[in-house]
Length: 269
Ligand SMILES: [Zn+2]
Image (cartoon, rainbow, N blue to C red; front, side, top):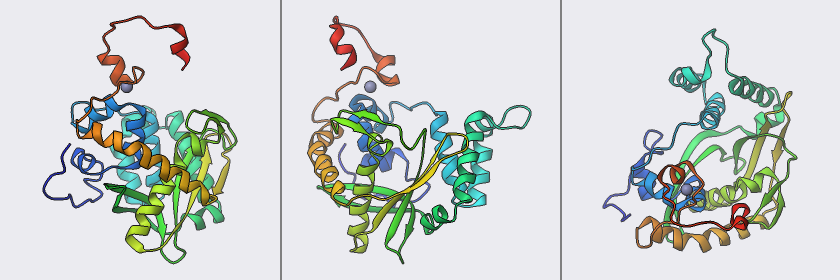
């Protein structure tokens, strides 16, 4: 997709728009490209609208709880069908979300880590591509920023092709990559290296929690990895090379036409 004449002025209202995604790379878009090029291209061209999933709304709901009352109420209203049962109580996923919110709100150290300006948008050029980021919480006095994450279990191990080994949920969901990109974009805007933290709460009952920091050397690997993938991704985004299909996501499943057989070994690769 060619860059349009004028760069969009990014705000809360258009940050997630198709226009913004066409003009900018973001961490979630980058992860989507790695996940399935065909689906991501269709999404960015406005040809495919992914279904609204409960986990997505749970994430929005939890984040809103730390923004302000007004935002939280408006999310509750907007998604009331997904959140509330007929009898007025909440569906299990949102009961869990409430437990995670309370767990963090009742912990002074977690709340201290989350203290700062909320949902701040920055843009910067990285590796010759314009990026957009939205930081959950940024504290200019402490030169730090914090992202709020929910997960099953802090100590669960995940097999990772990228890291060729077992990792924590933080690597498994590419949160180290996210922190590395955010750190670079913030540095380009402020001239300073801000320290990233993750405030994590678990879906267990009662919820577990942690404030996570990162050995800074982890970021070099992520930036090299991003740069190495970006050229091909931009070629696909600019429609200079055809997108690869993952053949597993809902977009690929709904548009799939069989032309050949599969050897069974390919099923688990
Ligand atoms: Zn796919």
